[in-house]
Amino acid sequence: MKKRYLALADGTVFEGLAFGADRASIGELVFTTGMGGYIATLTDPSYEGQIVMQTFPLIGNYGIIESDFEGECRVKGYVVREWCDAPSNFRSQYDLDTFLKNRNVPGIWGLDTRAVTKHIRERGVMNAMITDELPADLEEIRAYAVRGAVEATTVKHPERHPAQGEARYQVALMDYGAKHHIIYELNRRGCDVTVLPATTTAEAVLAMKPDGVMLSNGPGDPAENAACIEAIGKLMGKLPIFGICLGHQLLALAAGGRTVKLKYGHRGVNQPVREEATGHTYITSQNHGYAAVADSVPGGRQSFVNANDGTCEGLDYPGLKAFSVQFHPEACSGPRDTMFLFDRFVSMMEEDRHAAE
Image 1 (cartoon, rainbow, N blue to C red):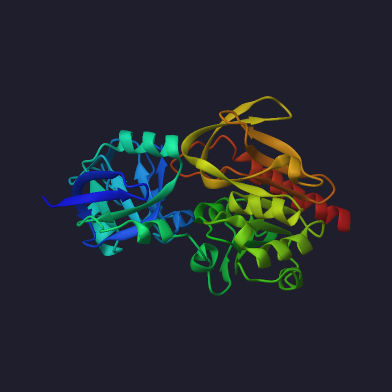
Image 2 (image 1 turned 90 degrees about the horizontal axis):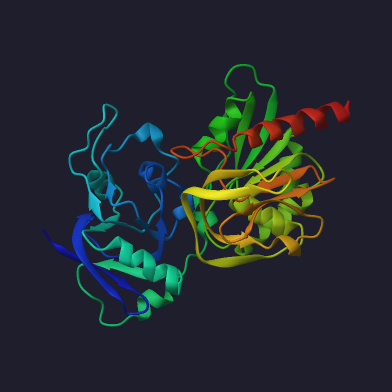
């Protein structure tokens, strides 16, 4: 077995063993706490530019199932305590090592992932390199930055996904790195979904005459996407808008608010979120490194708050036909507690239609 190293930007080195692609890679090192759902993690476009570490100690035991993919694999590297080379599942098509090799993603296993997690929690998310040979200096690792992430993950041309059964609504989905299950949940509620490139202007969206607009999840620093923010600002108040994850942050910025980078983010399927109106706590799936600052958003009303650290998890915009959440209500391989938010969006489109008659 070949040795491999995880070299962090602060000079800390963890030694492990090689699997996946036989190459070195630099990325922003983050951890996710999900006990299952590694297929969704590996294919979530929101991980663009990042090396992902699983805190659960055994990964790959049910193999790789391509029909469960959320999108293209965008991770820069994969870190696990132990990987299963003999998966047991009737749906499994091949193993984790083969998946990583096929997508040129290097992996490292056999290291103390608990120690790495504690290191990041104490010092914050930082860049790292997966490598077979320790670098002579750390300059290249420290200089790395996740840039142009939305541009790298969005569709290049519009894509139509027809509703399941009767088509009752037309939804324009702004693709900032969308997960497939967002489309699926809209389709099964009678929505024809047209997935649009992130660069689509507000004028082009309005010309389609959709019943509503969905702002998807996605990677990177939300403030980097000036054109997207401008387009959303022009759409607010014109028709119903529902934002998820990055879409939530972009909506806050379009309303005049600001976002901040979190010390180590929220990634996993066990994040508690409290609904402000009812006091009810939901367990949610999350994957983000930035947060909207609720009291900086003019006209925004905080609807959900993270029960662990008090960060904003949702905003409503009374009078502007818009709302958004930081977590993933469409979660696959995660809790489905907040699926009702898709029903709320559909109800908004129905009410807006009646109001226009």
